[in-house]
Length: 134
Image (cartoon, rainbow, N blue to C red; front, side, top):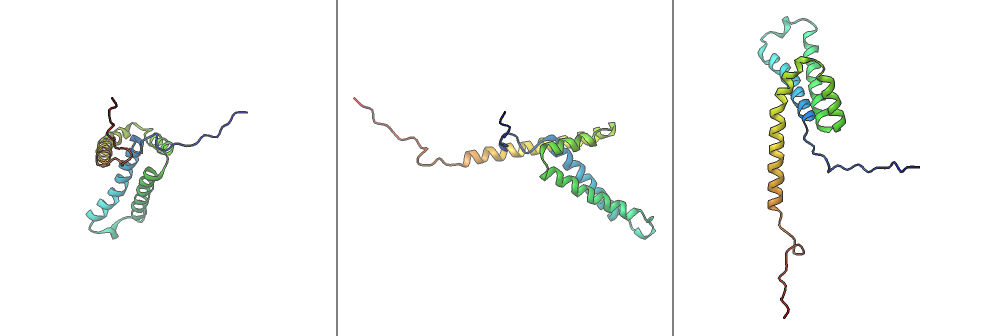
C-alpha cells in the first residue's frame, strides 16, 4: 500500500497569479459599474422594477468574485477564470487583467527585495575572524 499522505507546502507557489488578478479585475468591474450608474442617474424612481435588483446583484457578485480571488485556492481561481473566459468577448478582460498582474508582481518583488536587504544577520550568522595558526 502506498502512503498517500502528502503535506501541503504553501511556500512553493507565489500568491499572486494571473487567475487571481483576472478575478480581481472582473470583481472590480462588477462593483464599479453599479456605483457609477447609481451616481450618474438623477431619477431612480423612473427605473423599471428590475433595475435596482440587477444593480444590487452585480454589486454582490463583484464582492463575491473579489473574495474568491483573495481567499480562494489557486485551483478555484483557475477554474473560475476558465469558466469566465469561455466567450471570445472575455479577451478584453484578459487584456485589462494583465497590467494588474504585472504591477502586483513588481510590487511583490520590490517588497521582498527590501525585506531581504533590511534583515540584519544575527550574531551567530556573522562571520568571526579566525586566527591563522603557524
